[in-house]
Length: 451
Image (cartoon, rainbow, N blue to C red):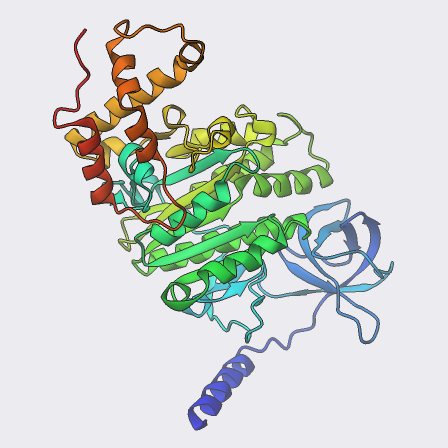
């Protein structure tokens, strides 16, 4: 008890020593357009958190400075506009552009502001970290040379990931992205897991806590959750906070798995902010700054030469209307180090996970997989592609055996291939076992039969 009191006293002394007694400038609300308010007399930097005065007994509305125009500071409310009054005083608080990070976040579930949502005590983290990250020079990034074990047989064998890789899971709604991410979280080999649930349903947040925030896994997991009914700047801030926490643990030399679900909701939030500031929509309604936000966020993951730590990033990408030419999908595919595509057609056949193997790709597989492994994986991909491209002919009975040796072999191995690609959601298959099962399936040579 005495140790606890001494610790609290030390924190109070430290706070008193840094107490700012300088006069504070206040502003006044002069306009409100939806969630965007204009404040006069308060020249606060972009990224500053502010609070407006409220009636006695009511919480003070919070807002974030996102721009300025015509002598007014433009702020986006972090909540509803209910009972917001014209002329209300606004004050700035906190340090612009900085968030608190630290080991204290392990085992906790927090919101975009770092406030607990798990019903426990506030997180008292003392390390300040830039919300936009610490930009490294290109040569400060280490290469991806070590395979990453995600615990899923088909991905380990055919789309082999690397430690420090950034990979996307691309699919339409209801095809199994969340289930696949759950499988990766359970099977991944890493030191720390940072999960950002951005713009998802509130029910999924509670379900995630029930599944993953318990036992040994809880002590190495951080959850940042911002459901879909929260303000756009909170959703964007939640993704930035999750990435900042991952950067902090990487700086400690740890292997971090960063899972962000979903990158599309982050793009939607950035689009709302850009349009509210008057930026013109370009690619299907997405302003250029919204898509640039994704690039900045993804580029923060990777390996570090300085600390020896790594951030392996897994980002879910929602293909709206199953359109894989959507601007968000195109932008993510261009900047990521690979992508895993889930097919609605394959899911409707009852095969889970519904991997579209020919459309999936890992750009680092050549650097992390052995030559025999790559040769066998390429052969299996060719068999799968041959069967899928001729599926209509096979269903009509228009194909005769002997016409194509590759297709003949694909038909002969169709049952074992389907079993290889399927996996129960609670099953974990290590990398070494996945490669061994691939070699057993393809045979010792792993070569195509000669015509």
